[in-house]
Amino acid sequence: MGEYKVDSAKLEKLGSYIESLEYGEGELINILREAQEIFGYLPSDVQLFVARKLGIPAAKVYGVATFYSYFTMEPRGQHIISVCLGTACFVKGADKIVEEFRKQLNIKEGTTSEDGMYTIDSIRCVGACGLAPVVIVDGKVHGRVKPDDVAAIIKEIGSEAQGQQMLVKQNAQ
Ligand code: FES
Image (cartoon, rainbow, N blue to C red; front, side):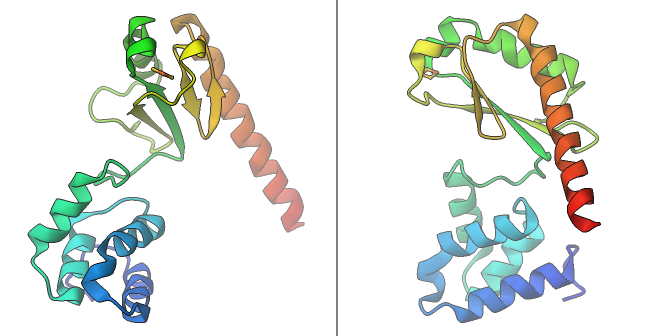
């Protein structure tokens, strides 16, 4: 597996998963979902590995990976900040919220901060238009967010992450 520039243990895990499936190519979406679960995203080497394992063209794997917004080719941060850019949220200034997050997290290019901590995502209407603009951070919904609230939200992510680390340490003792 040395020809692939990704973790070989993870690749082996993915390989066994593919071998355990009955329908091969027919399960391509499930395979990519599992691959993203294992690697956190879908690097091109992983796509190539899947294509070879199934005996199908790499372009086909790439086509499926790019078609579904669930899949990502970029590494994702530990914390996912999803800003709704649906009409109601956009009208209420969601683009300014995105801008403020980018500024405060110093994300100049792409969607993930350099330290790999944060990814900013845009999502479509989540059905909470009454709370527009809506931001979902690691699954927690924040409504009627203003650019001035962004610093407090980032601080909250930091303190929750610290709390979780302490919990892990305590459990390990
Ligand atoms: S448009 Fe954002 S929740 Fe509906």
